[in-house]
Image 1 (cartoon, one colour):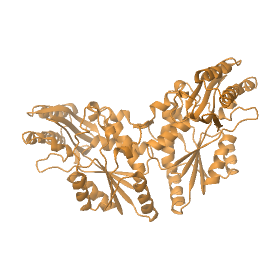
Image 2 (tube, chains in turn purple, cyan):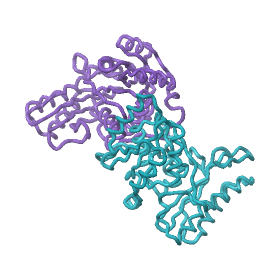
Image 3 (cartoon, helix red, strand yellow):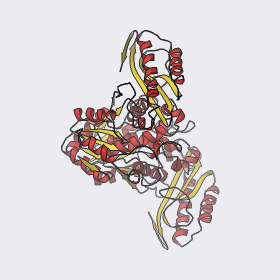
Image 4 (cartoon, helix red, strand yellow):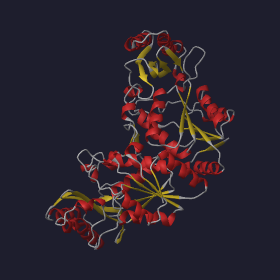
Length: 289
Length: 289
């Protein structure tokens, strides 16, 4: 596995790969890799000749009071994990390589960015869309793999790629969970031993709501309210939001039908955690994804 | 010359060109072509194996009270002009092909968009940046050619390409003028016979200012004021703006030094016309571009 730190060097590598007719699968990460990330690498590995992974903690997507400085980093360990996962190239640029001067250009999706996590993180998805646009233009992959864990991010990136005609296929990969259901996240490291058991409430609330829908409950507001109540009742947990939304538009549906996502976020100690369950509903038929 | 109307068909063509190792030069236009456009095609022709020209009157860059509906169109004549200019492919998509649904994604350059023409056309450069980003992603050219006539547009596109790492080289091509100095523009057709002679005041004001700078005048505000006065004094002409700006940042400079642009805009009857003179100033040495 090569580690490449500059855009020029990566472009040269990509150009050679392209000329040999090989396909490129790409996984964008902020590092501190866990099994969720590695499942993305595996998906890319299975479908591509060359797998490129980037590690870049993107300052543009962190608000002024968020955890940009504290965000966990361990490049050495990440390199080892990627080496063992069939990654061909790790792209690990510095902040000054990605942002040599103050950005004047932003990719904005106002309607998809002001909902769910966007309510507490108003500039987050502008930062995500802008850096992913940059990275896709640098790596120029055939397909890019994103975790369903960040469900709103997937919606934002899919829509950006579609609206801007970016020549790449977006693939979302299911959430990887701990044995007790907690979604794998680099930010789980913020949880104290005392907080950790309570963090499962996100998945418990989602799972109960999903089960209700499978059982035939079709009352949008009541299901949302029960998720909110479950999370709020958990000691040491502060609800950010509980929602049911159309997977693509992120709008709350009038009826439980089509591609939907149950989505929650909560603060636990220093951590802000998110989780979701996407599903396809056709009448009585409910398929959890 | 092929005329291609769908994105899929163009992508297939581009893919074949790419696989044969040929280079692509691209000219984005709104049609109703004049010698200014054809000079862009010539520049692309001279530097590329394949020349792609697009004609698309982009609704996203017109304000609600602007001339989107009235904007002149003549595809048959444009096709003939392009055929004779060495264009290989004309891409002429419909509005529904470019915007199959309402856009949720916008490429924004707020700092470069709120100046000069952006003051009277607040959404214009968002529309320009967004559609050019789309078109560059569709055509995937090695180089794209834009007229210096739209000097602010060139600054916006250069900065967007740089900030978003779009894999394309941007080339700006000098303004083509009528014998009396009026910059060629599709919108000159709006001028009545009575208005037409007065339209030369834009270039006269710019040229006088440029001559003053060449002669050693270094008073930013006074030079700007004289351009404004010259245009305002012309019968039937209403000044929009007269400015001197840094070519890249579009900010008014403190001193006349570096890459600068004299830029003016004015309303004449139904027409809103723009013009500029870019220059490089190093001490006493002034190079008009």
